[in-house]
Image (cartoon, rainbow, N blue to C red):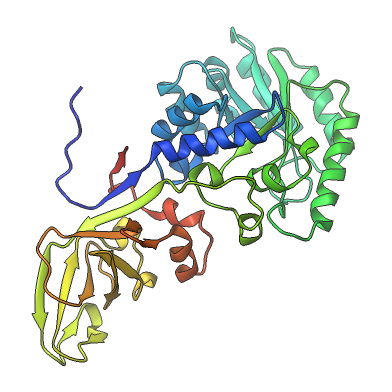
Length: 373
């Protein structure tokens, strides 16, 4: 098979061994027979869904979860056997395709089932469904025991569909305060007690709940999201981790031009940066079209194991950095990752951008190739 060749030096380096170690560590931490649902939605949080899914399955995950029908079809094209669960809403028109491809769908509305019924009448395989309980997240899901029973009865009245699971999602599992979390648990467990039968898979714990909440909330499976990629869901969880996390994402490039500018010379659009003295600057072939958005102006990068700041406005395809001396063309630049003893983490970027670490790898766009090792 021909290996893809990339000419631009900008690339995201994905450490699949780190992902596998994170999965193996969780598997050892969980109660016996609790399955791991590897969440590979949003192109595996920007890491690359197919490669990450394969690594996670090899390390012990048994189910793959995505957000959309198209993501599910893409995963199924590469993996014939494992269960694939669509966590978000799917259009009724997707129901027969899901049945044919053995993709499990999330359901939370009676009218959806009723509209899907005629589309499924001639399918050879039943459509498997997981009922979503909105226990307090406020997104999709039934919100009471009464709604659950009505939905259950509607599903049972229709041929070629089966209830394979039931789940919820916690809004505050990564916080120390547990009042709201406990309310969600109570509503979900009331719903479970009203179910006429226990489906194959009950799941509620996301990464945070898997790590720091009562083990009984692991139920039949846990959904492993952000920490499968080596990132903690919050500072509170990070301070209570049951095992070390191994970050999998690095972002690298090279210097493509180095020059000396004079005191008073400006750099970049709008001439917003003015050299305070004679200085060296380098140009890196990465910009906001790659996900290094303009708000990252001033963020440091690593060159020669040292921190150096991005100066001027970040361009669509390039940005400039202040250098302490002249470096050779081709000198490695690490935007996220480690050089020597210095590290720039995803969390550092998140702080700079006033956001959460989940968002950082997701915003690195598709034109930045993912290189796996």
